[in-house]
Image (cartoon, rainbow, N blue to C red; front, side, top):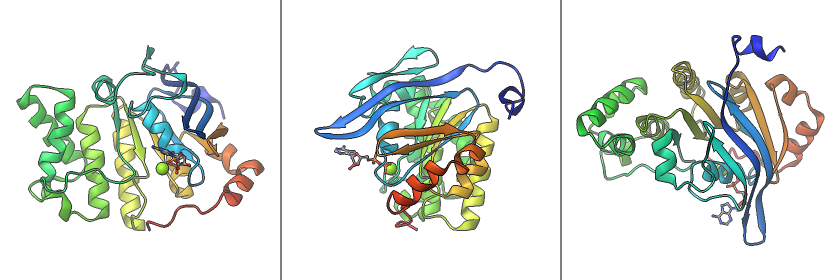
Length: 256
Ligand SMILES: Nc1ncnc2c1ncn2[C@@H]1O[C@H](COP(=O)(O)OP(=O)(O)O)[C@@H](O)[C@H]1O
Ligand SMILES: [Mg+2]
């Protein structure tokens, strides 16, 4: 497909560039020489078997653990060794595979924590919270303690908190895992809405139907290495992807 046509014409710039990312934990190589980029306004899916290094890659991009080698560029700025709070400040928002909600705190309090990453001004932060609570359909849970939310609501809270940091790039780590089919449809709608606000999205997703329908391009990781990057059509028709995926262990439906 004509790339220019696919993205509505005009030249796009890269919002995120990963160049030769390697991450080692002692002798274990979780990511090896991973290179790809995300263009402004794009939705890029990340797939791969359990243990392929998907979350590790997000940890590098968001500044949680810097990579062992390689470079990460965000909006033209080298952020390879930028700490997590700085990455959040410059516009990289993320959710966590295991929801990190502060269970004793209310939904509102959880979201304002995100907003205060992006501004020191309390009024501005509160305005942001209202905005993202509405966007994520969380207003009705505003005063509920986060620990009482169900899985789908907790995943939404993760998204709301990440959105409160006012990201230009949003990293979603399995935000659909454990959701029912209806909840997944609602989550896809939310992702599309966020993307239509001009926010680029990198999303780790196990449900193939979801990832193929929502992504402009898909990155396939296997054993820490990049197997391919391509359109959903290219990825699903690649025999190597099919065999790596099917031969790569369980597809992590454990938390369903
Ligand atoms: N903090 C860590 N310390 C040691 N090993 C880790 C750490 N984080 C991840 N790993 C290992 O790195 C590999 C990739 O893990 P991960 O990135 O979580 O995979 P995925 O998200 O694709 O399932 C796994 O073998 C995992 O055990
Ligand atoms: Mg993971």
